[in-house]
Structure formats: structure tokens, C-alpha cells
Length: 123
Image (cartoon, rainbow, N blue to C red; front, top):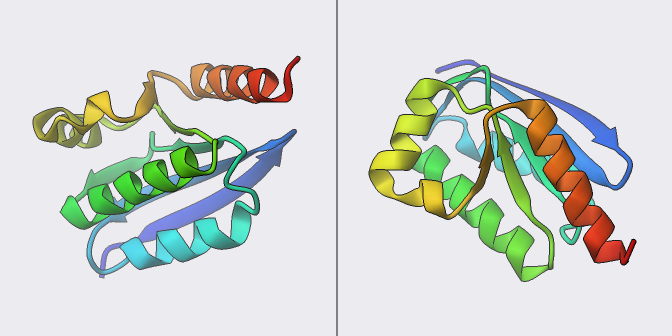
């Protein structure tokens, strides 16, 4: 079973989840369950730091699509930060790179998420 390491760092009004290792059919549900427990309000931005995620299969992609739809449905936004080259390639060849708010660095993702949050709060 591939190793999946998850961390969470809450920020002011948004949730940052670090995803490292390999995401596939054997552990995608673990990520979903983890996010459910760590991200209490779907209307707030969710940032996934994917810099250390070295592999993702279609099950992981399906999970990300579901997270995107859930965030969108509740008025939130999912941001993908610094996806590893292999993960970026999967997003590109499936066309889902146009669906996600993907950022080249964690800092840019956090900045965009904070702007989204400020806009939602009317600031």
C-alpha cells in the first residue's frame, strides 16, 4: 500500500492540507475522510499543498473533482498548490487543469485563497 502523509495547518478562515506520497485507490478515501475532519466549513477556501505528492491515479483525481464540486456548491473554492510534475501532467492530459484553481507555489495559492475569502466577506 502506497504511503500517504497528511498534515493540516488552519489559517485565518481557510484550511491548508499538505498531501505527500502517493494517492491512489488504496488510500484516496483516507484523504477524503481527513479533509472532512479538518475542513469544517465548505464555504471557506481549502488549499491542498501537492508539492510532495509524487503520484496520483484516477481515483485521486476523482476525489479532487468531488472536492472541487463540493466547495463550489457551498460557495468555497479549492486551490491546488505547487503540484508535482507528474500530478500536473495528469491534470493536463485529462483536461481538469482548467477546472481547478492551480497555483505554481504554496504562497501564491494562499494569497489567492485569502483574496477569495476577503471577497466573500465583503472586505
